[in-house]
Image (cartoon, rainbow, N blue to C red; front, side):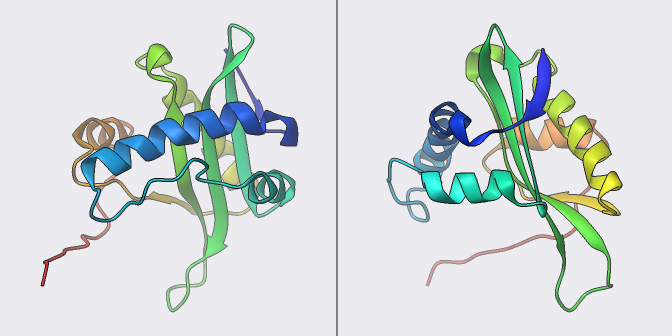
Amino acid sequence: MQIRNLLPEDYPAADALMQQLHQIHLQNRPDLFRPFLHPYTRGKFVEMTADSGHICLAAVEDAQIVGICLVSIRTRSNMVDMLSAYVDDLVVNPAYQRRGIAAALLEEVQTRAKAKGAQRLDLMVWSFNKSALRFYQALGMTPQRYILEKEL
């Protein structure tokens, strides 16, 4: 497996993976997610891949993109002044899961984020996604806060 930067011409493969991820969210929380075909427009994707404030990685195996990780480098408002790397999206093709691809993507993200001055790695996991929560915890991530909800 090779990990490399996502390129603008990778949009179709990245879009297909993002659609898979969006379907998981849509199936589990149709009250919050609406159906649409493209989670990122081609323009937004190209913008992200060119922006130094993002880390956009592809995992390539069998000459195809089998996983992606999209990360924003940012300072949180109203909090201690430090850069953090926020994982916006991490997805691996189901046929390639449980092979260490997601862990390798996150390891590379951490290396690159540190090089950009980030001091922490943050992400959000939906409560329905128990396997993702177990995966992140196995990598040493711990809960930072809880977002609660109640329908009115």
